[in-house]
Image 1: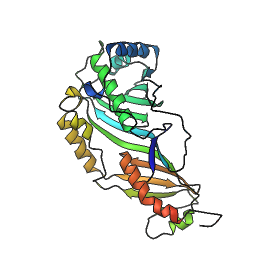
Image 2: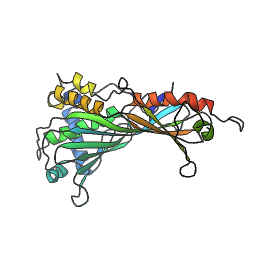
Image 3: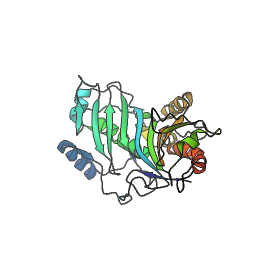
Image 4: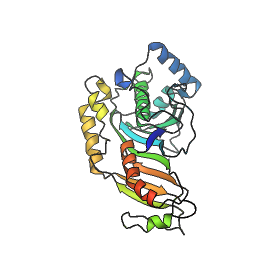
Length: 288
């Protein structure tokens, strides 16, 4: 079975214990004061010296790398974007170009997550290489909006849901895409005159779709305004309403790109469905 890793992280995907405390995040007052100072100076840095993360070469054979996670959540209150832009560090707000405040946050895994805040209370996050890291970052932004003297919104972060995960995988040998497209057991979309890669779509069973915000449900008793049963159940309904399909782009070099998954388990399931066929069509010594 393929190993899953964060992009530029040598530890397993869930590499650190889940944070504890209010809203799944704990920090001392001194830490919060240092963070506020860092905000005014520029980029919000959540700590790049994580001992669990080490440098590694991208494209390692047999490893599923997660490069980008996109997720949404609701703050359940209206946001004054002008005030929010002044309250948050390293934020950009240009209503003529886009009606949201963008905040860049450096995460513990050495990636930079971009958080977009909309006036209706919707928040979108991209750029993180971990679902939990993105969830943690979005909770931190919500907490800032609640505690900053300029805002002090009654924030209730609910309905966190992942909409897309971008991953990559490197097969152990080159692949014959013509042989792969000729297989009857697998539906392959391959038009070399239009695109050099072959495309395969894998439908994910509902039993594997873990994007039901179960973690927020478990924290509802202690998370206060940060989680609620209603938000969790609504997220589960949204996940069930749309079928989850992972799209794999396969190239003759053995490189595989995965998109469309809403959880790492879904990405691994889609990859395991395709790997046996890749082994049948692998190229060795110039023959397939």
